[in-house]
Image (tube, rainbow, N blue to C red; front, side, top):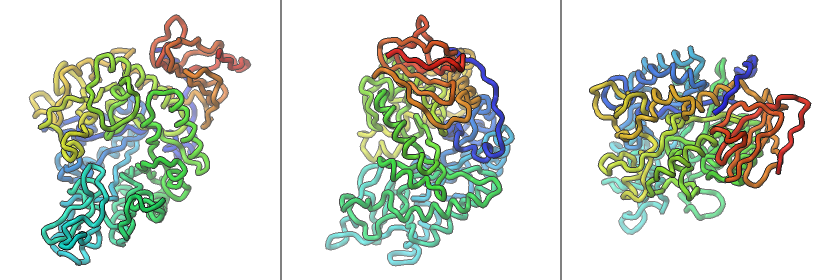
Length: 555
């Protein structure tokens, strides 16, 4: 791996105010990041202790998965109280301290908001259960009578994202809607209390220094009041309904009212890029995750199509594209890219081989540099920078994900990408917890010693070294102020584009090595050059050595 330092550009006040347009956001899954108190669960004190590591990695913001009190039916996405911190993770005072300490290092904080549903232990739902059928308390949710002579059938055939019916029946005969687990009842966004509560929650966290929120399941809030079937025409009964935009316009007005405007980031799973872009109009969300890019296999044509369509869809609304390779819901890139079958899927049962891991690591390195070179913001999921593979052989009795349990083991679930991070040492818990601590809440593999932060920090060829060098160069912006790309002529196995006057990124997907562009200096490569040529599954960043040179490419 080769790297070349660049001069650091000056940052204007306007650029600082629009930091989110090109930010590197590091996703912190707190339970698996670092455990300071030795109970086997990551906590806020553990994150605070690791802030120097995140600072050295050149990240601009931290996105925290839900850190609120929760029964943990869905890893914290079943929230019982939005204005507190889960006691296993810390306290509200610790969260405020973490926000301040991170900001002192130039790192902003983004927190998760889950507006589609709450926990079944949330005070509102408990009140609804006590109040009984037909009560005002139940109108904050989707309580309905069932079909059939005795109401024994669900109100409709909607299915949960975790498998099975989206309806659960109570002993009093009412059914309630949950698009996820039964412990996550859906809120009714036609109710004014729901609007007012979430607006107050936004202000609560913004007032504590949070720079923005990530909105979970952002396209699911509004439902068809008639409970129409999924195949009842072009308007989906509970995904991407037009009325949802009114809520986000209200949220944007709140975010913009702060001296430093807060940022709204949407988790919007939509196959239609134009529909997704509607969420990014100037008076709505600032950015939305680019799941099309994340879901694309390691394929030159597919990745180019994804990049082109993403940039084209975002341009009319002047929103930056986000580039994401992984998160807490999907198979890790090293494993995903390593399979011979490069199709993307949440559901795969085949355990990877050592050959798969070598291939996958090589491709994951190349994909990382490709994503870093694209205009827009970049999200890095914890452990991605260490090249952690998916853990696929978790004992059945240790699995926590409701996707595993509700599918009776057909869906492997998401536990494999949520294994606690390895920091140092030769055996579990690899510094995740103090010596003699309780076992980690998800067991770490016995062969992760070479993947620890400590082991990789001393290896210039490691994945961690690649991420550190790549993110540092990205911050230095070798492409200048140019926020566009120009595709360069190439063969069917090569992806090549330029940014600015001098920067070029080239990815070789094919088995034939290709020569490096003449008249260019090498800034960084994802893997070593072989005899001065670019080998398969390798990305290179180049800078034109002489501005008078013309970029020529050998077909």
